[in-house]
Amino acid sequence: MKVFVTGVCGQLGHDCVNELAGRGWEVLGSDIQEVYSGVADGTAVTTAPYVQLDITDREAVHRVIRKAKPDVILHCAAWTAVDAAEEEENREKVDRINHLGTRYIAEAAKEADAKMIYISTDYVFDGKGERPWEPDDDCFAPLNVYGKSKLAGEQAVRRLLTKYFIVRIAWVFGLNGKNFIRTMIGVGKTHDTVRVVKDQVGTPTYTLDLARLLADMAGTEKYGTYHATNEGGYISWYDFCCEFYRQYGLKTKVIPVTTAEYGLSKAARPENSRLDKTKLKEAGFTPLPDWKDAVARYLKEAKL
Image 1 (cartoon, one colour):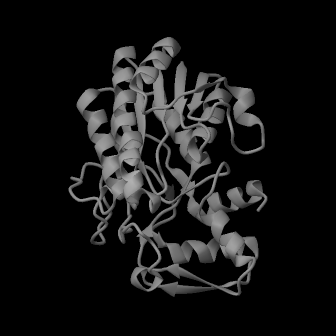
Image 2 (cartoon, rainbow, N blue to C red):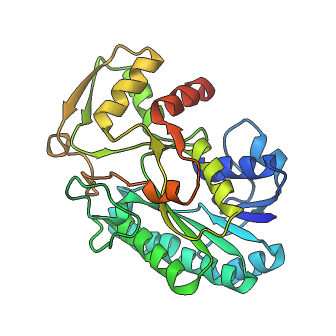
């Protein structure tokens, strides 16, 4: 099995390369940087070759993937800076990366007759209500530029391919990059109190656990749209912060606030990021471990 992975300089792509290579699969990693740059553990660069690729360059995408001849394309590359996406000068670029770049990857997958796994997000929904979103729910009104661009990417994949997995995730954290845990522990070390929103509810996703699931998927033909976050129930960002502060041993006081009270974000955030994962289990895939367990493993490895 040969897998082409995009976005390997990010949190998820890095873990996917190592998981796939660890299973003995042939892996080729790519990102926009000239050379691999990421967590200083050396793993991604020693376990798989790397090729530079700008996914917004249609000709380059087709050329590189045509040469690679993969059986599976795992598309992790994306613009993920949600607030920066709202800035007028970035909006076109966000669409080029998350929508058009995904379309070019899907075109190349079709040409290569390869399976495609596209990583999407809870932000494709409007974030209203309290019912968990099911994978086949309609997505009509994403709240921000980022969500709209990721939904457009989903639509391109569905329009072009039949051999695809769309996997929506939320609240991502991993070793190779910035994330909420890393940021808030840094803040907690220098502040007596922190304010964290209580009215946005979802479940975190540890990239190491997700990488294992995606590798499992890649070996099947159980195509479709799935939701994949860690188990352990639905929580708020406030609950999440309290737990990893507790595990880390920080005594910083966490003050719960509403999204309106917090008031610093340029992009609107969904209050309801609950993702129903029943379909994942029905397909026979192993659920991700409890999020508290994932936090413990992350803190042990991250050396924060």
